[in-house]
View (cartoon, rainbow, N blue to C red):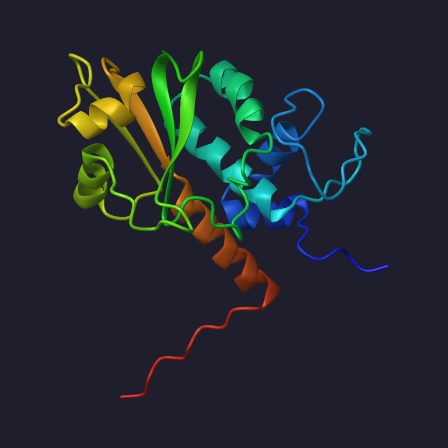
Amino acid sequence: MGRRAESYGVEEAGRITSVAPSTIRYWAGSVARLITAEIADSRRQGSRKLFSLRNLVQIRVAALLSEAGWPQPLVFAELPRMFRPRMDWFNPEAVVWGSVDWILFGDRKAWGGRPWSIMGVGAPGNPEQEPTWFVSGVSAHLGDFELVTMTWPDGWQPRSDLDRHQLPELVGIRRLTIVNLSLVKQRILTKSRLMAGRVTTMPPKST
């Protein structure tokens, strides 16, 4: 039998996500239990795990938050809850809320007792939904970004009634990491297709 479509072993997952295979093995193992391999995971010691595209996005998100300096116990406690099915947020082939999907990871308990939230702008049926000043300002200032961490020594304060209404949990926050989930999904999908030979690059034009 051939390998199931859209499944990736540890080495392939490492190349696509830029995460060391040893780290992925640990995260998907019985000790960390951070990532659950969705295609094949017998839970036996030494068994081969096969990851889905959704898993690859999860791996990249975990790596970004770790690289941003968030404590490992916090990341390990919060991400499994975030990775549970939630409107297919982590599927790179699904459009959930249009072109902007962000994960917000804050320095204090918020969003119903968790230090994180997932937010979107627009929707497949309403792509022109007005973004908040916060989203517009960050996007205009940073352009395309995979991850950014911002700090406010005196705590963040809204600049408009729209921000105050839509982002009340951010008021007073001093540290915020934003993962640009839309861009992460786009890059994972492109890399996986390149690896599978489904995307070809155009040769340079001769001069």
